[in-house]
Length: 285
View 1 (spheres, rainbow, N blue to C red):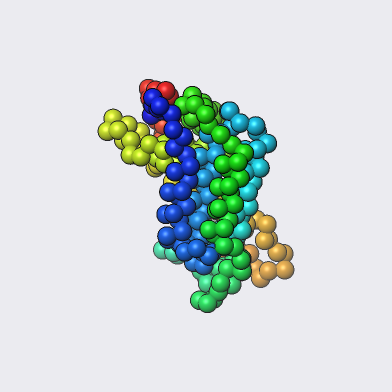
View 2: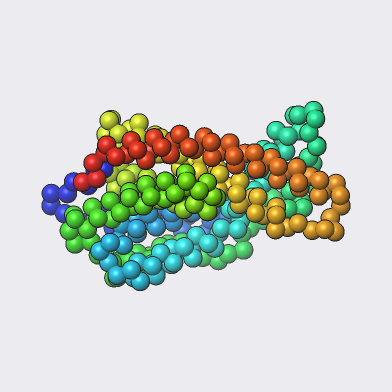
């Protein structure tokens, strides 16, 4: 892990500005209005929260938590529209794969989308009013006022802590297999990856293989999380007054999701072990 800093100059403020500049360039200064723009905003907030984790070891915990909540509130404004965009994508994909099988219960994609996700028109706008530049400026102002990294050691402590939490949560996910533990592990994989990528750029040639596996693992864990969220959505919207045909399709869809989740976890297992145990050979400081 690259943490070298002979004469320490905190790189996070410039990194913050780079993330925000890139995001606002993609979206504009007002608010996101398309699935792609919302996705860009949510990635930016995750990157900022990953950088924020570096302050936990050397700053007051409440100060860090307050700023984390401020960033999270901005992301949560757009979480529901983004979730349903993902649900639509997954449902369409699952129905298409299911209907290719001759012995499967046929699934009506349009009917399922209409029943289990909100209707969406071509002219729909996300009903949230937020000025991105102002929101990011407020976060940056509070960040600079309340948090500090004075020495290179402070930055190193944050990087090491994130790395250790990633290892601990990964081992727990492997042991328990629970969706909750996989989700926690996914968060720390994201934090570790974004911290390294944003602060130190492309890894050295000898570490590129490790980073490719880390990125691949993060994507697979993300897909597992998407299936878990959709599964919960389908379970919570169960309505006994629904027509038998729709209820049959719901149950069939849940079976498909369960199978996909199992396959996701199986694919993740070997990658998790490679990332966790190969990572030991990479120096933390």
